[in-house]
Structure formats: C-alpha cells, structure tokens
Length: 108
Image 1: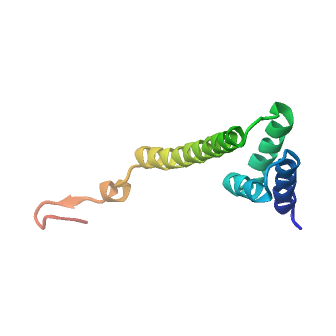
Image 2 (image 1 turned 180 degrees about the vertical axis):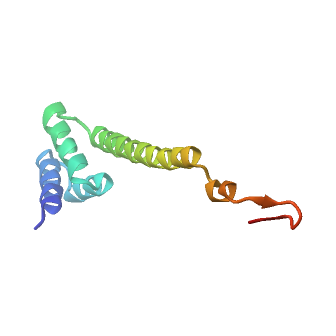
C-alpha cells in the first residue's frame, strides 16, 4: 500500500469513527484526491469536530476549490512566463534579421 492509499483509508477511518458511513468517507477522500488535501481534511476533522455531514462535505469542497485555484494560478504563471519570453525575444525575430527586397517583394 502506497502513502496516498494509506492516507485515503486513514481519512475514511476518521470519518467512520465520527459515526458516518464508509461510503461517505470514500466519497470525501475521492473529492480531495491528493495526500496533502486529505491530510488537511484529517486535521480539520480532528481539530474542529464538525457536528454534521454537511459541514464535513462543505469543508472538503472548500479544500478542493482552494487546490483548484492554486493549480489555475500556477498555470497562469507558466503561460505568463511564456508570453513574456515572446515579448522579450520577439515573435518574428528571425524575419526581422532578413532583408526585404522590394523588387521581388520577398525576404532574402
């Protein structure tokens, strides 16, 4: 069993210990997907002691949304870096180095 699977079942066990069905715990773990997010949920469950399934589901969705925003931020940073490289290096750098011949209406 790998670490992700171990944390997955640890989260399910914590939810079962709180009196909820195993299927609910499995769905919560599937929503969270990553080790870090499942670990964060375990910490929330142990610290906040939510009193309803709705609170647990709401927190799981909030954690997942936060991760999705982080992923989107990283994608934006990556593409912004690419765009800035194009602006700095020039998209048509090779064409500008060639000479234009007006007689033939072409680049040499």
